[in-house]
Image (cartoon, rainbow, N blue to C red; front, side):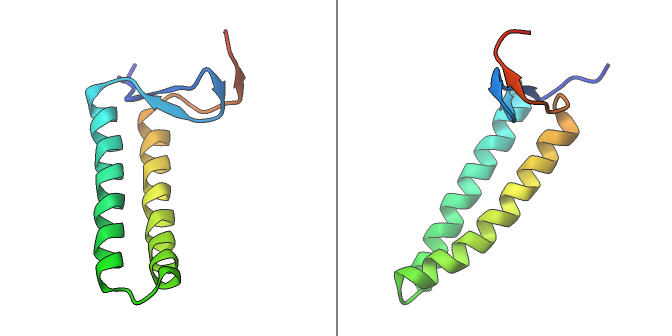
Length: 83
């Protein structure tokens, strides 16, 4: 069995990091989004320009994060606590 980087959440649908590799992926995701926002905000002329440009980048990075979680984590399913 392969080692998983992300385990299922106890409630709801999704994952949480359970190894250092998972935490590294999550930190890279957050760092990328913060840097992207700062870079976009530095050159945009209004709040709406910043928001529109950032949302497009955020959707792409979130899709990448979900695909990494799906490939390296437990298969997702809806959960209501306990096993």
